Length: 515
Image (cartoon, rainbow, N blue to C red; front, side):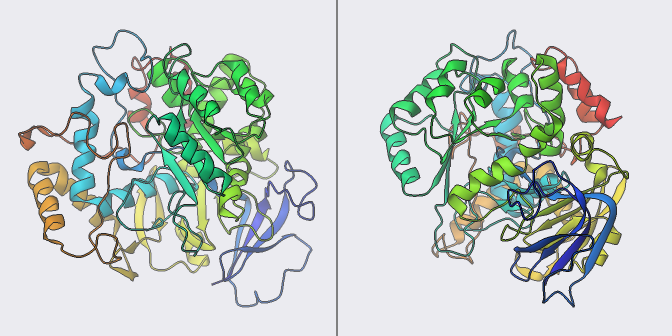
C-alpha cells in the first residue's frame, strides 16, 4: 500500500530536483508507492504524483523526516548480551585475536550466544532486529549466517537483501582474516559487481592486524566495492593507496572499549574515502547507530577532529546508502525519486537544527520507522495513521511503542512481544535442555536445509566462524546466560561504562545525552 509522510523533510538527496544541497531541509512530503520505492519528494505547496488518492497521509508536524538509518557493522547473534570486559586484563588488547583468548570470553559471550542460536534462532533475530529498529535503523549488516535466505522481519539485512532477484551474493562479508588467495578471489567478485565487507586491520597500530590491509592491497581489493570495517591499525598514509575509493566503517565505541584507540578518520577523509558508522555488537558496542552517532561526536571532539553534525549524520544515511547502491543497484540513505522507501522520523522542535537534533536524539525521540514503504515501528498514533497491521505493543525507554512484527509461520498474524521475551527467558532458565532440544529438532529434519520450510539454522559469525571459541563445555549445565540486554542506552548500560574498558573515561560523556 502507498504511504505519504509529511513533516520537516531532511532528504540528504543527491538529486538536485529535490534539494540543491544535502544540508537542505524543508516542510514537505515523501510519497512512497505500492512498490516500496519513493515516487516523489515535494515541498509543501507542490502537488504530489498521481495514484496516491487513497494513500494514508501521516503528518508528523515539526518532526524530522529522514532517510532510514543504516548500520554498516554489526553482529546480531550476540545482541542479547551485556557489555563485556576481561577482569584480569591489565592493558588494552592488541588486536582482534587477543580478546577471544581472554579467560572469561567463552563463558560470557560465545556460550550464551550459541545457546540462543541453537535453541531459539527466530526469537533471537526478532529481539536483535527490534533492538536496531528502536534506534531508527532500517538496514543492518551482520545478520548471522543461515541455512536459507531470509531478509529481516523488521529491517533489511544487508547480506541477505536480493531486491527480488535470484542473486543471493550481492554482498559478501568476512569477520575472519583471509589468506591472499581468498582475497584475490573476492577481488574478482567485486569486479563482477559484488560488494565485499571485510573486518580489516582491527587493533592497535603496529600490530600484526595491520598486515590485513597490506594483504588486501596486494590482492587488488582496494576497489569501489570494498568496504573495510575498522582499519584502526592502518597507518594514516596507507589510505592514500585506495584511489578507487570504497569505504571505511568506523565503530568508535567498540574500538575504544577493546583497544583504547580508534580509526584515523581524518586520514581516511583526506584520502576522500566515505566514512560509515556501525554500532558493532553488544559485548563491546552501542545499542544502535543512533547511539553510535553520539560516541562519534564525543570522540571527534575529544581528538579535535573537524566533523560537523551533518557529516556524522551522512555516515548513517547517504554514505552507506551510496556504497550499498554500487552492488544493490538501488539507492538507500537518501530521500529522492527511485530510492527505497526507508524513512526514520525523529522528534524535533520547530526551527531546531536538524543534524544537531539527530545526533542528540535518543530512542525516546524515534517516532516512526518505515521500511520498504511499510510502517514497522513507531508511536501508537503514527502507526495507526500509517494503517500498520498486524502489530504488537512494547515499552521502549518508558514509552509505549508499536511494532509490526509477524509470526514466522504466519505473516498474517502479529507476533506478540511478550511471547518472544518468554521464549528467550525459557532458554535462559535451562540452557542445557534447550540446546539439546534444538539439536534434536535439527537432527530430526530429513529434507534439504535450504528449503523454505526447513528449520532455521544459524551460525555464529565471529571470531572463529561457525563453532564457538574453544567449543562448548562438556557439561552444558555450566552455561549461564545473563539477563537480556536492554533495548536502549539506559542507566544500567551507562553505569557499566564506568571503570571498565580502555576508553580512559572518554565514554563517560555518553551519559550526558541520556540523562
